[in-house]
Length: 244
Length: 301
Image 1 (cartoon, helix red, strand yellow):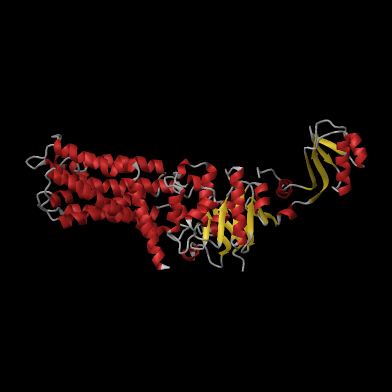
Image 2 (image 1 turned 90 degrees about the vertical axis):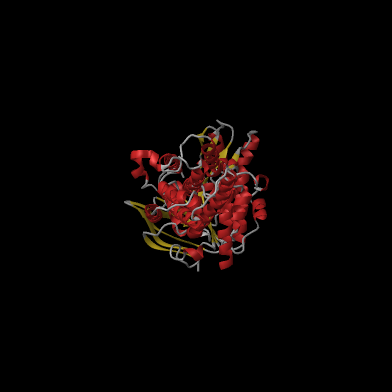
């Protein structure tokens, strides 16, 4: 019985990845927007990054954005619609079951993130990006961020209607893009900065910037804030999630 | 041991008692239809058997197992067709079936199932671009891919065109022949009569009758027939030795049992007057008559 169960998990994860890569609107949020952001902000002097080369700032920025887009937006919206279509309910009555479905979705998120890192990292390297910091910590931060954002995605998908999940995740995406230190150094946000630092996106960006540009200290506050989100969001999601 | 056992099932939603003491059983190789108007408690009953909700009271067993406590071992042996939805609109029937096949130890061949359900021609089209009937048949195919011993089909023919209904009927027939226990729901009397070995009529959460379709429709003491409007019912009545009335233009009722002699006399009289016979219903009520008699109301059955 066990071999087919891992086959089911694998087949489901592959299908989840394929569904992401085959749909324009899902590719838009996971690849096109981060890539466009990277090219635009690195090549055009829109935002000042001081003495730092722009790509050194924006490469970690779009990698943080990539985590948000895949773990929260793509996962949340697709799960929300699958719930609305009765797919989650139906899969609950198959041997795949809810636990393997959840695992498959997480595996699919990780697989898409690896693809994003390869594409975005490759393009950034082509633009002159040279990461010097502790890359291992960046991977750890991305993993923790994935848990936090997937928790938010599941929380919305499991409680709101699909259309509302779509609207809320897209709004949060824009908010995180604007005020979380992803596209602007947090210092330029002035009064907003202390509030923004409590958001998971700012925490992730705070951790990725020193880890992936010119080195420097990875802030402890970032780890703490992100860890709290990574604990709270999935817990609340698990407690409130409705399959139908 | 019956494949499905339901004893005194109650399902409560807050203050509402959706299912109020329902009992019935389904044996292997038997097709049972839960028949009743919308809101009768059919779906609540089926979803309890599928393990989606706990009984508020009573006992349910599927293949001897508790659908909630033993769900993990049960899901490999049941096939589920939800009342609506349940498949990915973005995936083609072929991809959905291959995906679902990967969940089971010894699945049926997706190609064979596509053929069986008449979906081969649309196998590569995203499900959202299929007709309502095609989506229903996809949902049925997905319910069968794991070779279930028990199949729960919630409204399997709703929105299905006549050709599709024939396909669904043939599939249910072959499930019966393979010894699968089939529990289906419908609010259409004619479908229940055609599909099921036994019909359990539910109304407002209770079983009002359970029997073979032929037993539910009482042998009637009348003949109904259709013919041109305003024929001479008095003369026909004299010829048949009973009263004949025109219920509505062209629809007649003969107030006597449909003995072969009387049916022969009726058709002879019509032939003599060169009147065409539109239809003839002799000796029994429809299930619809039975439903109205048993539930005592017209709840859009």
